[in-house]
Image 1 (cartoon, protein in one colour):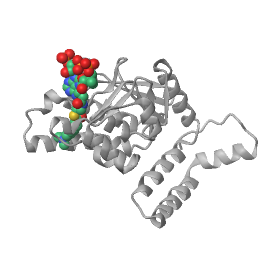
Image 2 (image 1 turned 135 degrees about the vertical axis):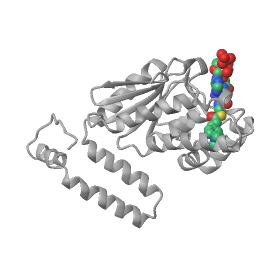
Image 3 (image 1 turned 90 degrees about the vertical axis):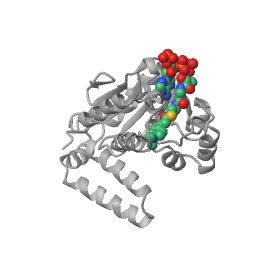
Image 4 (image 1 turned 90 degrees about the horizontal axis):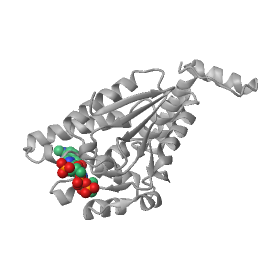
Amino acid sequence: MNKVLLEKDGNVAIITINNPKALNALSTEVLEDLDAAVNDVKNDDDIYAVIVTGAGDKSFVAGADIAEMKDKNVEEAAKYGAFGNKVFREIETLNKPVIAAVNGFALGGGNELAMSCDIRLAADNAVFGQPEVGLGITPGFGGTQRLARLIPVGLAKEIIYTARNIKAPKALEIGLVNAVYPHEELMPAALKMAKGIAKNAPKAVAASKKAINDGLNETIDEGIQTEVEQFSGCFATEDQKYGMDCFLNKVKDKQFKNK
Ligand code: DAK
């Protein structure tokens, strides 16, 4: 993997999109390397939380690779869109939580990548937007769907139709990001959050993620049933017995095993 770096720090994996000459634009090669990194992390039982960020100081991801996309025909565009969507859906449904540490431009496919993550933290220089209609296309990696689910639909439509970028404080105000930090504090804050999550029972965190995600596409009654299944499934884990024993025996320094 050249275009994506994968580091592991204890139980946290850091995936860095590494195409800085093009502001980390998502070429097919970048998407293939991202796919490989996500699959590595998915199958690593020692990884409990993941951070996705961009190489360099300026950009998280400046979108799909416009130079690569320009000459595609309808079939090729559909293939490219399908592959990107597959990778982003893998992130969205990954069996561990994913934090986007948005360290600059998050435009088009960059904003779509951030929205595929569970939580978005931003640097104060971050810029968000869906500029696609200005290029003669629609968002193609889930932007029309995820933005309209994440923020008020009228605001999502405004952002997509005007193709205007928004800065980090506005992104915070509308709930597109959870928090904004001075640039140099972004990665420490993302790591602190990831390590905090990783202290909890990984299977319970994964089950919570599944219940929340699945429930968003269900009726409230179906969603409650989904939660019952995820909740009761936890009672088949060693970590549930251990976590409750720790509480009852006043053990503070818990070490869950992901079992
Ligand atoms: N693709 C390719 N190269 C890019 C790029 C991109 N998205 N963004 C930046 N670069 C390249 C620039 O061409 C430039 O290359 P050189 O000239 O140095 O060779 C280099 O990165 C530095 O960029 P700038 O010189 O432009 O840097 P500035 O600081 O002046 O401006 C910027 C930064 C982020 C404002 C600007 O680069 C910019 O506007 N970039 C494009 C942003 C954008 O429009 N992104 C959205 C792309 S569209 C679909 C699947 C997916 C999608 C759509 C359909 N299907 C097929 C279904 C998704 C679409 C998108 O994401």
